[in-house]
Image 1 (cartoon, helix red, strand yellow):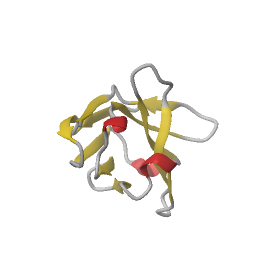
Image 2 (spheres, one colour; image 1 turned 60 degrees about the vertical axis):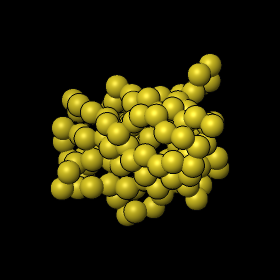
Image 3 (tube, one colour; image 1 turned 120 degrees about the horizontal axis):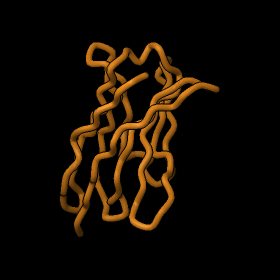
Image 4 (cartoon, rainbow, N blue to C red; image 1 turned 120 degrees about the vertical axis):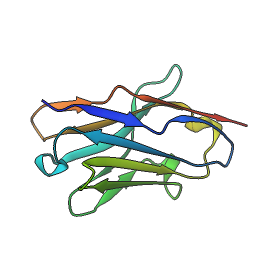
Length: 116
């Protein structure tokens, strides 16, 4: 069992920045799936970014060049730096952590609102 606590959401204006953090109750070394998802109003949950322990990253086309996912092993956290935010980035952001073929654990979600 893993508990995930997200923080860092809020309201910003177009072009602003936010940094989301997902603190895990266990070291990320235990998992090979580490990602951030988001769910906008009336939309399905979608992958925003994921990262591996080798540092390889993958981003949704809509956030490439603006968002950066990272792992902090001392803090046991998965972070998402979001720059140049747009109104279409407004969503509830969720972190997810797990193992391929095993359980996937989700955070409670943190709201990000971007105004134009």
